[in-house]
Length: 69
Image (tube, rainbow, N blue to C red; front, top):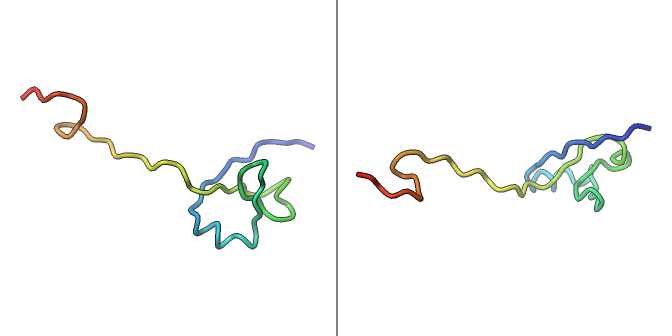
């Protein structure tokens, strides 16, 4: 039997709550997998806890540099 690492998909918490009847939490993966068949196939979901990206700032609003004007 082949094994491969399935990619984790990050989803908002409210979606995990809606999908709770279909998914169970796997402590070894630290993610949610499909009930009954999740050990072998199906999506692997994680709670969205990644940091949001800060918008890039150019020009005068850029921090860390002294103004040359």
